[in-house]
Image (cartoon, rainbow, N blue to C red; front, side, top):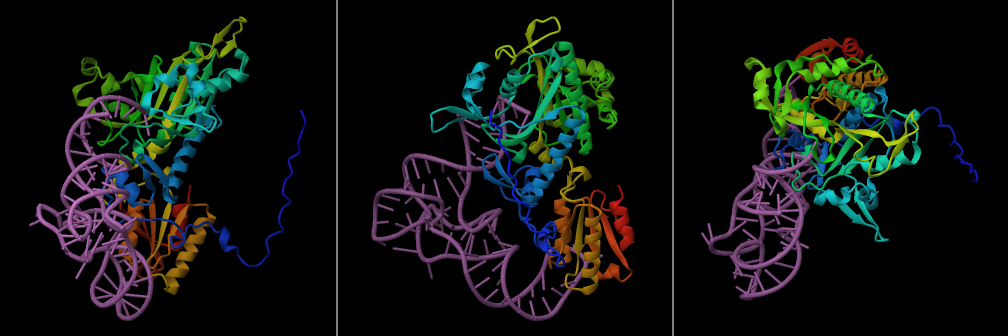
Length: 467
RNA sequence: CGGGGUAUAGCGCAGUCUGGUAGCGCGGAAGUUUUGGGAACUUCAGGUCGCAGGUUCGAAUCCUGCUGCCCCGACCA
């Protein structure tokens, strides 16, 4: 092999001193940002998250079930993705990135090319080769795995990626909650036998509890059908919402179970956590057992509502490894197909689900962990020396503290600014106007509670930048 | 994929039945007065009426075909 040298471009001349580089300032002034708010609701949007995402300038529909993510929406999508990534890493999963396009031949090895039906978007390239836009990646990850891994000594492994998928749904709806193109985290576990595969399953299960909890969501693992991917053990993670797509039944106490902290040891025995979370009855209507529900759940603890699926974990054994001959040698020297599982989180769907779970009449109410900005800074009288100066000071202080702040420096009327900030749902609004400044104070409004308090500038900064 | 709708300015809509200069509100631009919960007035810009045929002196409007999008159902992260 001929080694080759990577040639780096020589570094450019140092920046000239003196002039502050305005171009480098993060574009967090509303006057320079791109936030196309809609005052009226586009008629195609039926459910609240879809309406609010369109109105708040988060997304734009480009085709049925296909959306462009505008700057505000992208920030949320990225925050959700980052939480998923951090928790996957914490659980010992390893990130990679597989392509969106896959060869049909790969899927023929497992028989899924024929099995998938019209939901799969099939593409032919200029060489008449058949490709498909991946709806999932079990086949490809198995192909990657079998190319490199031969021995039980290399196991266990959990690999994941966060990538766009496409399923040509017959009827897309609910905005990003059921689009055709969607961003998904999918993880795949590789183990030598069933017992260890279930340990991987448990890791992902616990990781999922943490992922959703970090977003301020109470997601309930429910026994679920295994669906077309197959296997014999599966849980759907469901958040309760009136607008959910499927009916669910569960024991009320499952809503109050403790979620493991970030000090959870994924190498320790996770069985007690799994048992605690699976002991109480929780099932989607597809697999609901009314008799068992009534037998196991006291009448005053029975919850029957609707829910949105935001994640699913599967154990599927050798479903892919066997037909694809992804074999690993065990300690006894015998080669066997690996035991696998797959674990999905609907990242783009979560953005819609988060809004379904967190909104009011005025708009979105972002949980802090996924808010596009933590603070909305409203200058109520642009052009007034005192308010401009106070806002500049606050803006600089928040930025210095590393807090995401969107500064509304437009010359709109106060009412319009309030309505806009309520709509986009930033957790805190810092309201700066002549009235408050006369007393040396600014107002801090907490979006979730509507609570408003006036503080001197320094105290407002201190309160909003602590931890 | 069955059933039902809809397509007119960036968004929400009227006009179509009964063919005759394409309208309203919001939004946008300019100006004046305003300014702590989506201001008022004046002026202006913005539309091959989804696409393609047809009927007619004349089509947003009538006829035929096509397409996009939405809703209900079945299906799905």
